[in-house]
Length: 568
Image (tube, rainbow, N blue to C red; front, side, top):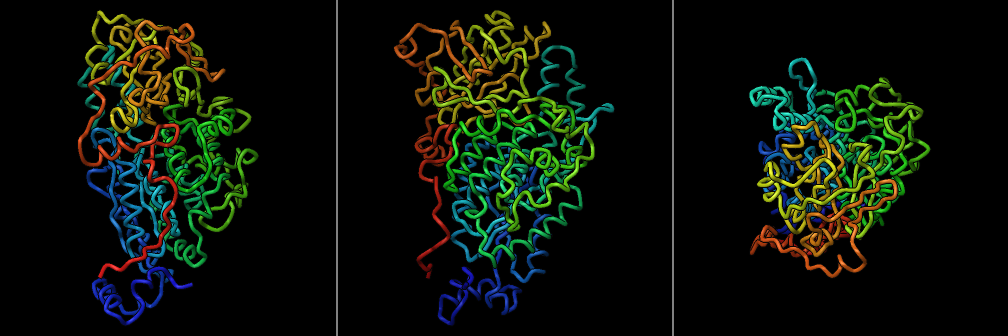
């Protein structure tokens, strides 16, 4: 089979001359003799601190590509710094995916190595790769090492939420809170809790899109560079075998990812990302699959925010392969991987080395810990909750709604001593969905009212059309669909309405007489996004709802790798 890159480089005409000549710059003539050209799609950026070390990872990939007889070519693609981007990195996930897709397709490359770490970069790269469908392999950037403060380990993200609430409660001084700032981020790498970054690295491996055992290797660990080198060699073999995402990303692969998501206590954000990736790959996957395949899966990994440990411990204890081995009867062991071998091959040799971090199936942290999908008159198209991060006593709850029309409304009113709220109330936040904000910010884990914190309250039922950081915790209902800005029922809830949450029954309802909710006029909100130009305008006009992965409607599916026309 003629390598795709030869459609640029082969021949003696003017166009082939131009393509080769401008790429010379040190490359020998035989670089264009038909050997595979490999793009290294690199999301390294100083403004994406979790990915800032990926240049070093790329160097190891390049060495592996050269060793295997290919030509490595670094391709910078948009990087999304979760902690830096406003209004939210999720607004730009689809933009990054679209840009990466177009650049991979438009360039003379035969395969691609995908380097990502921070929350949205691995999803965006997988969406792009699925749409182009050239041979592709993921190398996750890895979590940071465990930081410590006053002798105790700090989980980045999770302890930010915990400590900041203690400051608001008056049990921790502001000065001591700020002291932890320089201790939390100890090394390069992404969040060291089972937040979205760690979760999506594990999802990439569970999908079969990484080398076995790579998810969770800490960013400073030299074994990450070893696996990056190996990935560079592997992509050459993938090109030779024409092993594309369409041959790896099967329905069985996605169901495996859902099982893994539950067993590791992964982020609810994985739901929208896996749905979006499946949409690009043309694999049928729905919100209900998360409940059907994952709801009864036990939680085995004792990691923040659902447990106590951190990612460095997870890797030391055996990592994802050990978890998959423990869940072997629940996964499709025949699902393919980028290596050309099934995901179950060699799984029996993956041992648990520390049962305080990775539990045995016979002694799980929780018996049923998968993402629960709720339905009801507040979320006819679905909503999600993570029982592993919730308070068991609140998973069945009836309480009076206290409604906020925007995040600004919430922040202005939350600490007002006259706010009519108690520990049984249900905080409702709207206007924060894909279209309303825009981009579904991670504000679903709303802070608790100051007067309740002072009384010792540390959790309440909270409902929104927003997302929640994977590092966060609490009894938080998320992704209610349709969102309020799209005319969803959340727009019709009023303060004082009685709301009933019943996770076991998979229900979320507002108690109203028949027909009243439908008859109500939705609340208007000046806070809904109304851009007049640019990416935000395009996004709002075309973004799908959370239950469909929040991709753009015209980006679902695959366009393939063919480019018909010449540029000269």
